[in-house]
Image 1: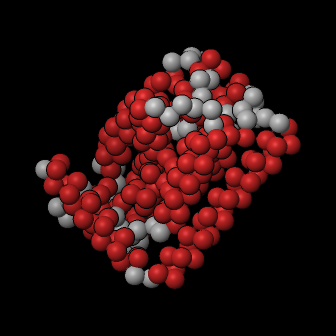
Image 2: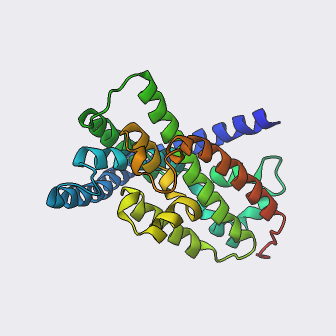
Image 3: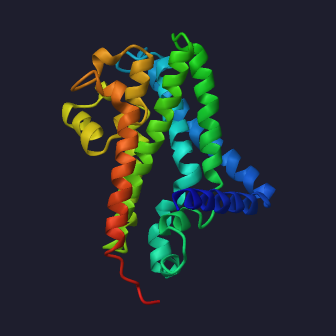
Length: 268
């Protein structure tokens, strides 16, 4: 049954992508806009680091690597799963009612309701920045570091997916749950590209244990750059980042399915 569900998810996602790609001009404009938006964010970081020489002891190349990992992980989760952010729309318009009478997992139907083209530019931009930063950073790219980079990227994507999935589950109890999703997204986007030690102690605790932004890019990057000694709380957290992603994704999925039992149709 699980294999069939995964196959169904892949088929629906591919069909949505093909449908959206029919509008090539729209895709080109969205991609260019996405590159411009991400370029502004990277330029801001570049100016800050260039002005002060470093950011918490991180050089321009190190910060660019962190930014590239953060953006790539974001793209890896958002390309297949960004529609979880539209759960309030699906519920409010009565669309979610149809998900419950079809022989397919409701979450799969939600994630494949349409394909978000803008996520492709996030992934492409992240990969481009990551390749450039990886060549400039002081890292020996042997099989071990390459494998860790890939594990960190996937783990970071799972952490971000888990956070959004858990917050989206609030929509089954409160239909107007858009505000928490936007707030969480704003915090993750604002804090994700920065080294954790530059934040106050209270913020470091929140970004590690309450809203685990540190596990998305900072902790895997600290391992690559041999900076685990500066990791707040415990240096082993850096090595645990990919496993934390798997654990949080599993917990969030179970939480989402439990909250689904509380769903009540809006009646429209």
